[in-house]
Length: 482
Image (cartoon, rainbow, N blue to C red; front, side):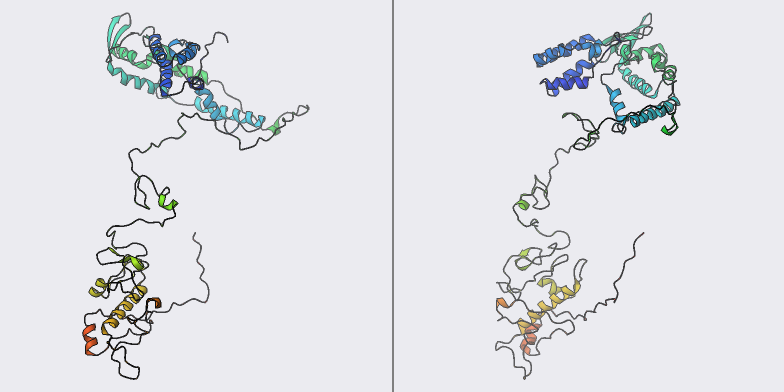
């Protein structure tokens, strides 16, 4: 077709423009602005800006005729102002599932797709005289026409003044406008719609006939005939054509094209968060997260230092052990603790509960011996540790200077050291062992000295023996959930 107009896809033209060494957002904007220009003066102004940026890029574009890629040089006969080759892209996306099939299967799937598509579009009902997409463009241009003021000059011609200071001439009889947008697409531009509103006519009457229902019906009046399966085909008697030799290529077959580096990825709906300061939940510092914490790379233990109380308890997790015993005000006692639970200053501390909201200090034990165990703590363990510490306090205060009495005499001091440890126990012997659950906790001595010393000490908690757990002879089988 020698008389047909040939146009180039601007997106592919820009790819070749980048391969020539003209990269960057500034060159891309100038190229697309020159391609979208509908008049020659606007096109020349954009090319002058391109010349100011780079003379080599300007020369590269001058070697490509503008009639192939700029609207300013397009013909007004086809009534099409498309700058991209989207028709081929849509067709390739439609046959994506059939591309890797054999030739007969490929052609059969394409035939079925086109047959169903033409039958569906043929029965489409339009609510207006033009198609839904064209009607939306007209409505959009009608809103923009509010910035234009049309003045009738005679002979179907109007002078339109824009709010931006530009002036255009619209001819309603020839369907032309100085901006050439109406001439190229066949859809009235905002300047033409302002003139149409001045003449009190319907905008759809000035849309080109190619966008109306009669032209649409002529395009889809033909149909593709259905075909039976291959088993019902007539036998020709010829030698069947064998498929070509196919060699399986290495790797997974590609189903999508390679995207450009500056191309917007498919499904990009999320925006980057700017101004957000991230904080590490391991060390508490800003600028990195838990995965990139430098303490974890150096092999340091996980966790960060807490100042004061947090939540309901003074210490979270397993609590303080040894040097990290918690005090009444929520701080951590870092003094050394010996085997009997006594610090270097002579005060008794509590080592802490392994699991629970916090630890029980000495002041809390004296104030309320029967404290409530909150969720997460082990009640038998907490009660047993409280009894041990109460026994050790009572034994230290009621012990006589001469030591414990013999077994055959009346008891003038505390019970044997099996129940409570003595102060003379060395550090290497470890902490005292708790009393058995079935025995009652030991009582302090009845002497006056012991009575005076134990009057200010907390009384141990009396607990009932722990009920043994009953184990079923057979293993329980949990029913499956439906």
